[in-house]
Amino acid sequence: MIEIIDLTKRYGNFTALNSLNLQIDKGSVFGFVGQNGAGKSTTFSILATLLAPSSGTAYINGYNVQKEPKMVRRQLGYMPDFFGVYDQLKTIEYLHFYGASYGIPLHEREKLIPQLLDLVNLSHKQDSYVDALSRGMKQRLCLARSLIHDPEVLILDEPASGLDPRARVEMREILKELKSMGKTILISSHILPELAEMCDTIGIIDQGQLVAEGAVSDIQAKLKGEKLIIVKTYQDLEKAAAFFEDDPNVSKLIKGEEENSLQFIYKGSAFEQTELLKKAIINNLAIISFSEIETNLEDVFMEITKGVELS
Image 1 (cartoon, one colour):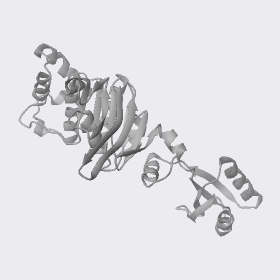
Image 2 (tube, one colour):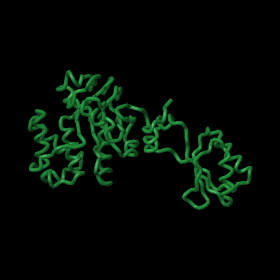
Image 3 (cartoon, helix red, strand yellow):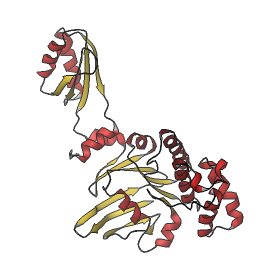
Image 4 (cartoon, rainbow, N blue to C red):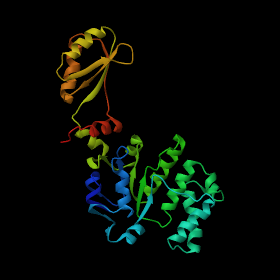
């Protein structure tokens, strides 16, 4: 559905995008993760036929974004990170304007627009002026605009940016509904745990290069295997600290936030981890709990973008 081949964009001596290769299957949701300036918006602008690449190419549903831009625009709905609205138009007029721009006849728009407003929870605001809408409502209106021509592909650049928690939840629910409708969605966000919930796969981009791609669990598994272990003891915390510090797989041992607890980074295997706990009990350490804290998506992002090698 979306195929990107050696896509590169240079501005003089600065390379914004460096030989990006990516393939996104039909009906899937792909999350694009990266810091500001990493190359996300550049990629989206090229896919939306708004920016010409320096080299490489991309295809949307089989159409070349450079050679067949009109066909590409029929295939996709694009929601940029910053979008314009016409403040003096009512919500329903705004959608009619864009529907007419796509050549959709009036009688079709009159059936379609109420359905879109219902999808994005704006039916009660159809006669409100756009400038009277909250930021979250404007975001949802822009999403409805990008759906007006029923595209197969949606490209959403930071759709939850600047929204309050309630508005983010509403946006997330709408995207889940679109996923259930079979739309192919390419979405970028800094709200990493929400991407993990919504996306089938994610790609982490840094300095114009894709440094990791796959399911969240797969990317976590590619890291070097460091785990955060938290141990709580009944007594003799100093004795426990000395014991764990002697293990070659233990590093960065510090006192934990809870009373009589400590935490450390563990680099050993799962078997070695169980052996460590067994040995602690044999050495009469009063262990109340010994738990591993699962790495979350933000940890993965920070580790990968600071240069962790993936195997």
